[in-house]
Amino acid sequence: MSPIQTSEYIHELTLRECIQCGKCTGGCPVSLKTSLNIRRLIYESLISDTVSPESHEELWDCTTCKTCTLRCPKGVDPCGLIVTLRGALVESGRIPSTVRDALKSITVRGNPLNMPPQDRTLWTEGLDIKYILEEEAEVLFFPCCMGAYDPRVQKVARSLVKVFQEAGVDFGILGEDEICCAHEARRLGEKELFEGTVEQYQEIFSEVKAEKLVALSPHCFNAFKNEYGELPFQVLHYTQFLADLIKQGKLKPVREIPKKVTYHDPCYLGKQNKIFDEPRFVLQSIPGLELVEMERCREWSLCCEGGGGRMWAEGTNIEVRLSHERVREALETGAEILAVACPFCMAMLEDAVKTLGLEEKLKVLDIAELVAMSLG
Image (cartoon, rainbow, N blue to C red; front, side, top):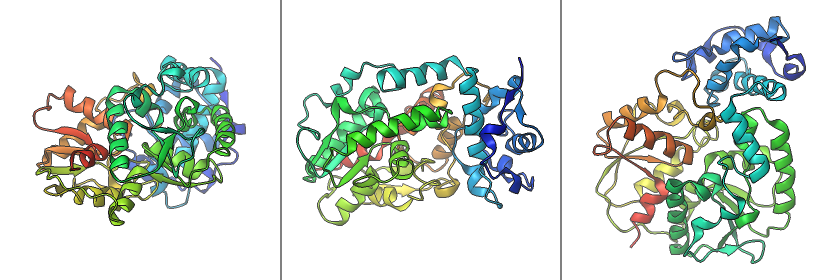
């Protein structure tokens, strides 16, 4: 197989500022568990305009947690290089079959889970929710593909609806007009699919009269807030929105949850968007709840390994799962509940708890579920 020409893909990146200090590889949570060596990738990209197809599998191990970029002293974006090289592989067709299937599903069905578009609102059964293109609302709630289709995350979406209704929030959803925001497609290298999705949503959002968009997933939140350009409403993650409701006295958790809880900072909410305090404020507003911190928390939080399209790039060569490490770190705090605020973190960490046989010692719950449990 011939090498892939990459000079056209990397000419805009700031690679030449690299001083080969190694902080990118040293800070990468998967570098010690796979053949992924970011410093070497940068070096090879600088001295050559090709990438060998024999080594391309390591590119799919990256979770795009962006620790490498955030720790670079010269402002280089190693994470951007990996996404860019993935783009070259996508165009060449040299991608894992699971990645190909997910990207095709987003294109054809509007979600990466290969689920029928007409089933996107089944999670709302029995709930009184507006369709915002038919009936105006102050808040557009965006449950994301996981919230709409995944049975476990549907419980989180329904919990948020309960909380919104308890607080008297005027909200609606896009219903069957909602499609994947394509945030993970962009991380998998499918730039054209992402750009096409942005154009579709710009048209949809122009018809929405809401003041705020509240996203369940940090990945959707990051896409809409930072990558979609100017939108006609404020974009918030749901933990920010709940924190505001509590501060305004519109939402009052009253039922005690006498449990020791530790919180896992999602990469796209915490280290990439600096939202650390709001989720903790919401948790601490619940009577009886004791919040304890893991040693690696806030900007130093360990990635769950679900981002960057890793949900659909299974089968590569990560030997020790980050999610397993994270669950063990949660147990070391003495916590009974591991709180999350991201569908991918929920999926990865709950699976780790089950795989390690720790269901009786540690329960994974979303912050939204805990708030809903605390309502009178």
